[in-house]
Image (cartoon, rainbow, N blue to C red; front, side, top):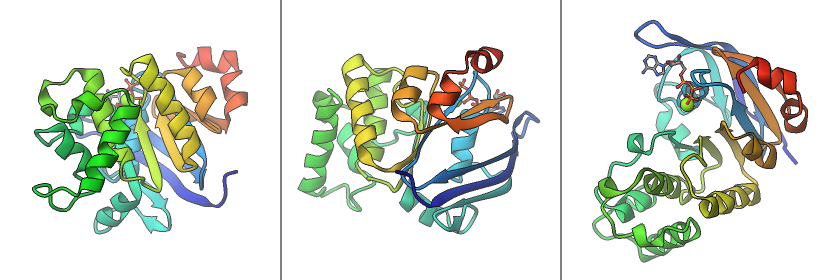
Length: 236
Ligand SMILES: Nc1ncnc2c1ncn2[C@@H]1O[C@H](COP(=O)(O)OP(=O)(O)OP(=O)(O)O)[C@@H](O)[C@H]1O
Ligand SMILES: [Mg+2]
């Protein structure tokens, strides 16, 4: 069961350069090994929250993960502990070949990759029903295939904290099933966003409902997901 608080977010606000206020005074806590689903309608601020947690965006307020303040100067440290899978795999993939992309984080030298890393990459892709992608070129993949490769590149690192933005969107049913059982067996702290309430109910201990950049509800998954009025009132 979840333990000590390892993520603390206090009064986090973020405004994009064009003036869009994506988050207003968001505060939340996540315990070690807790699995938290962030739900909410399109534009609620879910992806923005994950980008802030990984330090890719810098807002107002405070974020502390595993005792370290997220901010300039310690992002390398934060990213050694936190793995983020982007909503759009095109934002994530950057190596020309699938293999190089998946093992990039594990291997300092891509030119002479460690056979163990290759085996690990093959195994994760095999589980995702995508072993055949290993020797493909990244840019030629379909969206769902890219999504699997982007996921593999983060899962292979086994980060202490996983941030997953719409992890199952675009995945075929077999890959989705594997991912859900893999993630629930991981026993790792994770925050994931989703529009799929079934995924939220199967995977999350807790649900945070965002709407228009504010936390509207935060509580046990079973409680929030069975509150039909709350969900309907918030576009779900
Ligand atoms: N680069 C950007 N510049 C300006 N506004 C942005 C940018 N990215 C997102 N936004 C705005 O910030 C708000 C929050 O967007 P965000 O992507 O976090 O929503 P989301 O909850 O992840 O939505 P979805 O369910 O569609 O993925 C929205 O109003 C969106 O239009
Ligand atoms: Mg999003």
